[in-house]
Image (cartoon, rainbow, N blue to C red):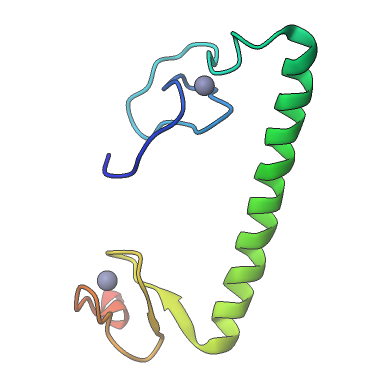
Length: 95
Ligand SMILES: [Zn+2]
Ligand SMILES: [Zn+2]
């Protein structure tokens, strides 16, 4: 994993679900927080997640309007009709 990971690597982690191999356990991220506070922290995280998803949707729509797409290979944005300037991968070739 190249990205920094802040979760506890359990399958139901509330901070960040691990990719690929993970432990099938209960998320341990909030276990040291008092139960009363835990509920609010959990609700806050869920709300942030929702906002992130909403932003993602808006971003995708905006990209679509601008004629941008995300490179399927490296994830960089590039114009739909051109090859990826980052990794030179040609998205249009895949069919
Ligand atoms: Zn966790
Ligand atoms: Zn690329």
